[in-house]
Length: 223
Image (tube, rainbow, N blue to C red; front, side, top):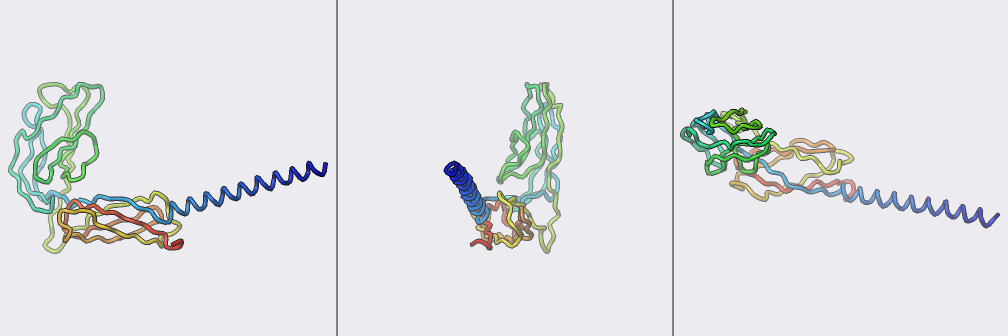
């Protein structure tokens, strides 16, 4: 009986020790995941100054009004493009969305989906209903332009919110930023304007476009 009690006690103690060890290992893993976190963020500096509205053209085409925009690091002027781009028919049974955008050379494109591609100046979302295969476009156009009248003093900052993969225990963590690419690296000005335990906000106060930033958030209490 005494031997059985001793074995039972040893078994309980062993399970407890394993539980403690697992808890410690999990704690170390969580600490390691939290202590140093890294990632990439894209911050565009693109906006329309005037014009560039998208309207229905002839048949299955879209027209783009003349206008002015800032993108790719330059201020550009565009003539009107009547029937500038065609809309594909939709032979399916579900709606298809496209983003109509200008690339940095000013050429118009349609990309399927609702996500704006990096490097794109979005003008409109084009929604093609199921079965829209007729000679004329029967869908809808939603304006996606960001219209800004640039001040002679300063532009409003472009912002990006970075959500941390693992929340920090407080806001007393450090954020380090490295510019990986931009239309003009000499015109990049980055500031971490606010922090929470779950996220932080980067403001780009310079004039460069297509800014790609590598970030690192460090929990200073454990390093």
